[in-house]
Image (tube, rainbow, N blue to C red; front, side, top):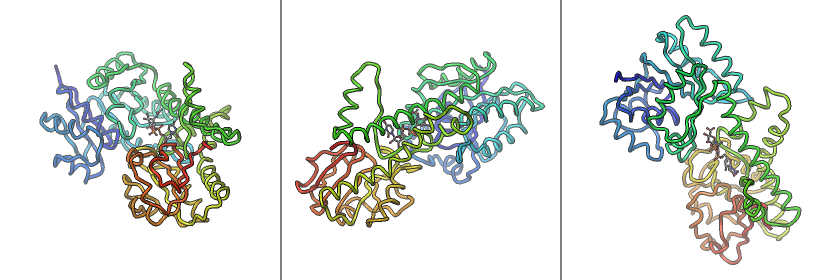
Length: 410
Ligand code: SAJ
């Protein structure tokens, strides 16, 4: 069989794992391309530029196969796969990196080549890109296959999540399905590119709206003086109910941002908009509840630790993390220290957990890292209050004089 040459543009958290997974198939010749010289140097030296669960094993195998190259110069291929960032500020995807990638592809493209876009874009932008490519002097096929990744389990998600192939040509869709089939074990579904972009946004919007609902239930539970976690768990025992978990707010680079693409481009999106705003209001709700607890229990709190600043459990990523706003709000009233064993380079100084807890008189737990479940808080006798926004701690971890309260739990 003639080898298939695939050039992957952008060797980041999506592009690199995708390139390596594709190279597992010995019939693929995969050429990775990135502008970052340091990254390419590392890859050429047999080192991964970042850590990702299980990726080192795949990389080791690929290095023995000789069908993966990394370069700062794009090389001609049959299939181009774009996995560059689409930093999405102010409600629209920023296409500057996608446009730069397309420009370099255009200078190499031959008739019949396939250009796959994996980066998340607004459906309107997808329409625009499709139109743009249809005007190239050399006829190429545009395909949109929204990326599949979840920080902490990217390989699992890339292989196990349903893949959407958005193409106008059934033959091209078949070809791309067989390309992904070398590592995707779940279903691969076909549609057109714009629907594919819409599906990606719908998935993230579903999560945002559902989390907003759970967050709204917190305030209802507080009014009724009941435990929201217990109520949600009982409601979820119903076969057709799946309420998500409340929390201090929604972070990450997708769920708090992507749904704005819908709100900004369409009418009748009140539910989505209100949900995004409801999630955005959670840091304020957390700080208000924390202050109310201090007042009600007549505590003398001066120093607060924000425990966990990553946007979610067991990741080192703090993009859009609610911990940032919580800390800013707390600083109006308290001396605040941020602490997170996984995060180093952060908006604020990060203090080692033990040191931070030794000098603090209270804690707001923002991220439910697994290691906090084994943390012995009882050695920090000065702690008066721990406010657990994820309901992940147990009173058995604390000294008897420390008060433990969870968000939405009386
Ligand atoms: N969160 C809650 N309650 C929940 C679930 C999550 O408050 O019940 C919070 C988390 O703490 C976090 C935020 O929401 O701050 C987002 O976390 P997440 O795990 O739901 O999502 P991401 O941003 O890590 O990854 C999402 C995933 N999308 C969906 O699950 C629909 C992932 O599959 C996508 O690939 C990714 O966005 C993306 O790149 O679009």
